[in-house]
Length: 152
Image (cartoon, rainbow, N blue to C red; front, side):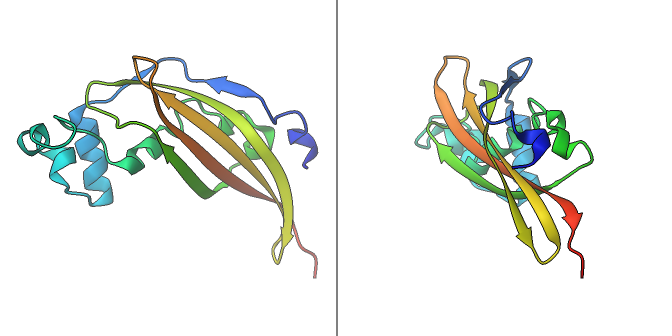
């Protein structure tokens, strides 16, 4: 484990304010990922769908990644890093009008040595809840930063 991250596992970060989800924000997300499912973008079609109104596509939960700026607060990522993966556990749909709260916890840190040198990985689990306290999702973000180049 990298010396700067020795005390980060278990540390919790909470976003300042709940984030309002609007139909416009959902539609903008859908445009950016090329998803035209009427349950996400057409109020009339969504009204007769299984949720009775507009809901966000499952991948929308990943858009809350910067809500609490966790990676900006970890010393090893002060000079940047790369997204190395994401895992989603969905519990309930996000609806237009929901207020989403985010609490994140550093779940794991580890190092790997590859062809390009030593890399540190940090896994942060974000828990998303709505205004009723209902669990929406757990989102595990995995970030990577190369620490040192491998010498020939």
